[in-house]
Image (cartoon, rainbow, N blue to C red; front, side):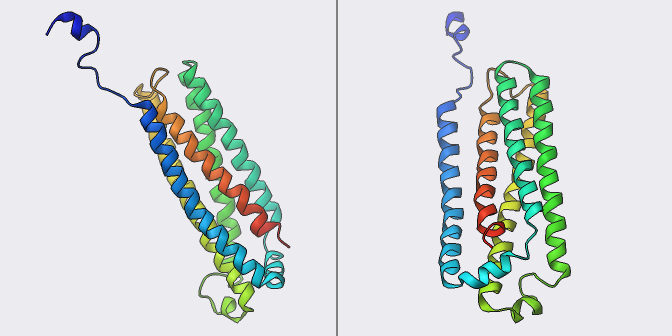
Length: 208
């Protein structure tokens, strides 16, 4: 094999960027189907127990829910800024804004922890005697609340792990200006996490 062939990258690893992005979009679609199914279940039960759902929603902490919404929206902004910075070749700015995204994600979980703790202290958790003593509609509301916000919280944790791994790769130079698809895909995942919360906010916190 000639040197010219080698110079043109005969042995260079092939990277299918479009394939990677397509794969991520397919994965995100399956995630939307998952949450979409839960939203459908919520809608059916809310139609059947409208009054009970309104009563139960009145006990949720709306200021904390709204605060967490602003936290996640800001984290989406910092995620976009991180991808943009890396595309421009500014690795340090990409790392800084990625760090802010991780901080805001952690802040979201801390706020959610205090919110859940308050409910648990009042005996409002799946399978609790207090929850079983409530009318059927209120029990269903809290059951869906813990399942759906808990599943969303799990996705936040997965997102934090993913972003941490990508941050390490950016710092080490494995993800860079010429190869940023991993950071871009991580950003798409993070935007999905934010989008799901935007739907959860009115369903639970603003339904009373």
